[in-house]
Image (cartoon, rainbow, N blue to C red; front, side, top):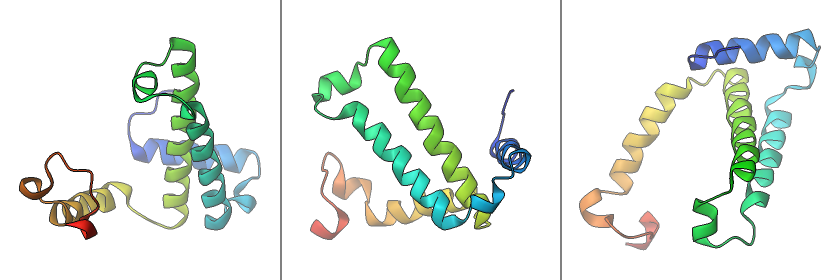
Length: 117
């Protein structure tokens, strides 16, 4: 299967759930909980690693991490679909909001939260 954009991915996920009669379980609440669980599984791969180790994963570990990232991505798309959220539109909006909260000339090189400066 080749997925080339968000819409085709959303449709593939809808079909996948429909074929398994899983849509009954895919409430925003349940999908959000599954998303959080998948994010925790991603975190597990990096627990106790140094910064350098986390940036240089061996191929077999990188393959596992990639699958966890995919799980997260798919759940985000599914939650957005259930809530009728246009991911690309809201992502663009969020980037613009972050530009306002974190002006480059003010925060360059700093990891402080916008409430700290």
